[in-house]
Length: 288
Length: 273
Image (cartoon, rainbow over all chains, first blue to last red; front, side, top):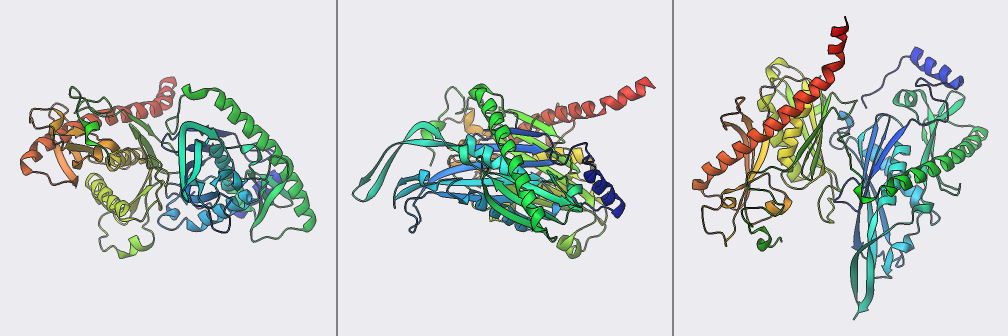
């Protein structure tokens, strides 16, 4: 993501294209670029997914470990998000350069998954006060070509969908000490309620989804919202310096909800389709 | 701790079924990313490394100011490991900035400075970013190989391939006989073999162009593990250079194939005219 600099002429060209509902790459305002997704490609993790959309490249790895619940939430497990903006995306991310963006993205993820309607942390509890699962969701941003939030949201959901947690055969308290037996079988997480993230980017009088880098430069404000599969919105964040009228804001939320429902359904269908190939599926990773 | 019994050789075979001088399968892809000036991805067995190269460009920030040498280009390397890259349930706390990564960055820089024609890039900087996606032994050597490929993809002139390869002397107390093939060191160790009590030498060499002589210049050599007796060093060196030569042949083939693929449309174009 070398810094994109556009002249005012170029910006006006993009703006007029959006006004005419015909963007530079031929898409309409509410159309996504085509995505490529592959799950379970890292055998040393519990779950993983790679998402490629335009020039954006995201890799998510999930690791699960046993932990002790928080003292104030003894019945709940833990879910932690960590985002790493790799310097492979742009030299500006070298060292600590990507930390600001990383924190921003992980905050959106935390907000999206925080509600109980989305992710019930109680399902991760094994023995109250003693043992629970801790899920680390680690997002690695390898390349950014616009629309990072949506891409991360989809990749995280796909990775969680592929996550396999060891089954617990026995969990007993042995003289106050937890005694847990793990089986070789695995269970999958129930991803039916997990949110995805939709970014609506306001350019001129209109708003678009899935902006490219050039389109992002033209926008002064955008709304990042997380939509649950039942149509509920679990979080809304406004980014950028511009302001949004209340009426426009409501319209954008409605629009985001419709797109979110569609995207969610498509994603789940695709993941189901991929799952049907079973364990014999060839893994491409980055070799394709 | 890995049990020593598992490493015991069975008819000269290693735990994963390889012979002493056998490498893991190497799979290569150049030009993975569109935005970077050069990029390469390499798989050596389960070790997966991604490298991107940016530059040559104007020096940025502190690296540009602090340097007193303006007659040569600057090489800037960053070695980073994905937090989920480690094997077996472990998770890394920080992707970069720890002592190990910093040491790796520095060694990578030395290796790359040895092959790039820096004198033709005064007042410029070349960035090499390594991202280890999955780690299963010999990751430093794999990242040197990937970085070489990424440099080639970026079109930066290099003198020779810098090839990394490890040789591990599995110091097994039950193996007394010196004639044993594994006793003299195994090439391209995986994680289990690296953990054995013994010594692992990571070597970066510039193998000779002429593939008949298994010889070359050693640029970086780093030992880890126990002490190594000097009498064994020569045989290890011979072995590791043999391995470097093999890897070079594989990478050279991959590069040529990639370049042919890339140049095909333009060749057609010439033929049509």
